[in-house]
Image 1: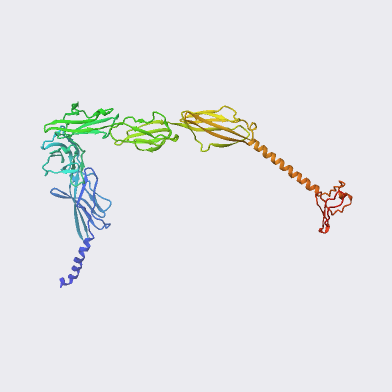
Image 2: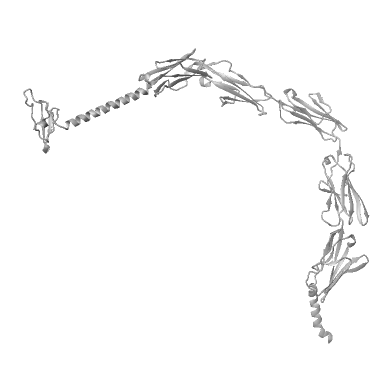
Length: 578
């Protein structure tokens, strides 16, 4: 009966117990790593509930000691441990090696008890130093000591690993042997690790370092890197020439390079003739010439035999340019062949220019039916096809000879003079140098002439315009041994043109004034030729106007016209028309 009555209560209690205990979830970490001398803190319970009892226990070998106790408002601590400000955490200001242990947090409440344990691991980061072997290592298929890694005062016992070029070397590799010697003193570990490795020739630039790690504290500590010197015999030699293309007059170096270390003695020779024995780092030629062209050979002797390497060196050169065809003047109308040539180590590209204008890219420049416009400065440029930076050029003048030829298109010019003297000139192509004759009565002073590059120029001043008649001629005659040419100037004096124009204006004004006077005279009355008197003064009607011309027309009022005809010798009219 009692059991039956308690069953509902027990069922309710045990059914809610897991839910109530879940409210006591602890946050104690499984492992805590702390560096020697640092502060550490281990959390326990994330709750603001003060109606609980919290205890921390220190698990020592063979015993378990309570170091912290809290039940509000009671708070007790031992051995330097204290409660933190939150999460009922356990705090130690300075971690020591003796603190390496397990710590348990126990929480009691009305619903039950719960506890969790944390493993505290105090570690000491060791000092580390690497030292490579002092002697060069022979590449002879044996394990050789590469370096030693020394550690001091580590806790707990460290793990030491070796790396070559960032790749870990493992003991399981037949080319690797690791020898570790570690001792403990005052609970701290010290010692060294020796790396032995079977090196090869391609390891001469390899880098080695060691890594020291205590517990699980990240990547550990790397030492500095070291490289070792390897000795191995040479089995090849090469000739290296710099630059690859050598121009005459430049600097060149020849290097004999082997794959042995240290390099064996090397003999350098050219076309079978020894140049240097042994060769130093480089064989240098400060000023290369074409005599340095040939086959160069580097030779070595080793325990594996004799090795030879050869290379033929070509010296590129380009001699100064030579021009043909410019020695004598050429007659107008002839055909000319100008030739450009240059001795070189290879094929040459040519380019002709006349007065800086490109003409052709051939070696020969052909001119057909030569004329004065073909005269001028010709430049031939040559460059080596295999080495364009090698260039040479040469220039010369071509002269065309013949009778003078005017530069202007017209042979006759009209010159209008103002009120000052006027200069006129002649320009002509001619070779040889011509003479000039100026003809005309209006030349004021002797001519001024010059002759440059086959072009003749002559200039002369004319008289003042008031000394010149209205129209005159001046002739420029240029001549040499091959002929002559004339240029005629028609001179019109603007001074007299202006004078005549003004005179014409005066005449026109006079005529206009005369006509105006006659018109005014005819408007004042009729002139009687018999008595020479004005008929208007004898009582002629005022509405009648007479004219001295024959017949005479008299205008009267009423639009009537009376025609008066001349009288005969008796004073009678020859005819009358009213």
